[in-house]
Length: 231
Image 1 (cartoon, rainbow, N blue to C red):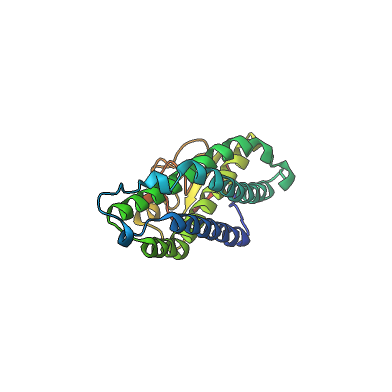
Image 2 (cartoon, rainbow, N blue to C red):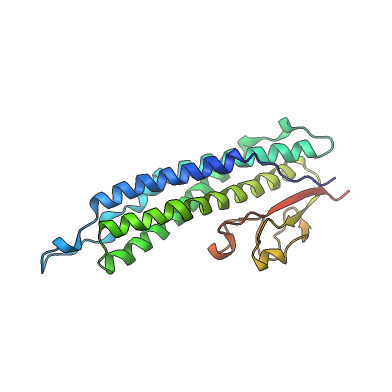
């Protein structure tokens, strides 16, 4: 019998709140240091984006948040898969086996998010935008980017947890892509595609929301996947 990961809705709400809080913190720090172009003196050296936005600092701040989201969601997904497979129980899912992978994943995702922010800030600095423009940019992050990142990371962690649970059973298993609501056309074409558990789908993803995918194929994805034995 196929098992699909079940993750309580509170995980997405918590992830969204976490990302909103992060961008609010980042907004306050960046706006406070952002130069006002109206007060720039002719001939004075212009600020560089790396003086206003430290990638390493913000990676250290964000990575633990991403890790917390991914761990909570993957455990919920993994235990629900175990519970849905004959002969297994929720307690059979060993979350400690995932800690190392999740830490690496969280660091990479945090870096990717902050690199995108840095690129937006570099563009704004070159264009001579002022603090009020940067505050407006972050306002857009709060309403659009934060929820999208939260959805993406919940989807990715759910898929990872489901695959991990399947691996931990030690059985020969397959996984099937299930599209979510309003899917991309590329994801709609994947609906029902079944491959061995340790293989990739035809789009190179190990699971929906996989971080190996380009942002265009990953951002906001709400697809899922089922796990089943081959016996």
